[in-house]
Length: 136
Image (cartoon, rainbow, N blue to C red; front, top):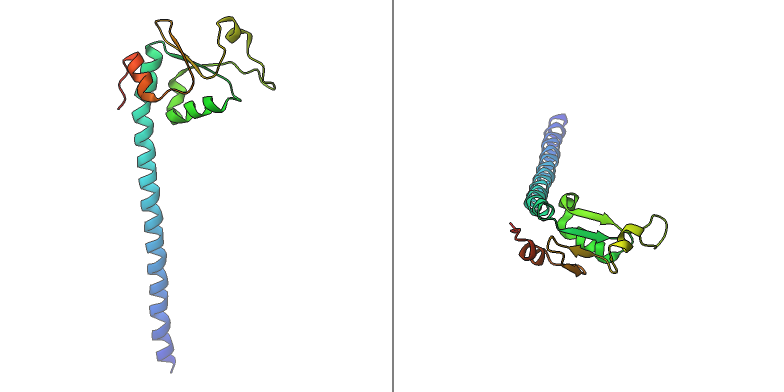
């Protein structure tokens, strides 16, 4: 009788180990796929954002502006390479004096090297066409 119990317990241990290993492999596979997808997106937009800055495109925005948040989200982490001027005054909905002096009235406002300004959330393609920066 002891033999029958031992042989029944052994397959259960192996089965549990197999289940744990399978679950672990699935988690690792998803994590790797997410990381590679995220990394690809970052690298793809870094060069574009750097090109915008090199071509002297600037975005004026405010921390409390939902459209500015939408524009920033289009770039993801690559937004750090965009020339950005914060016009919001911390703790209020006032506009910074420097932004008032240059005539910014709405957020976001993009200013380009030729002096043209465009207000509102712009598609990345429109930014690329205006600056000559190619989207990947």
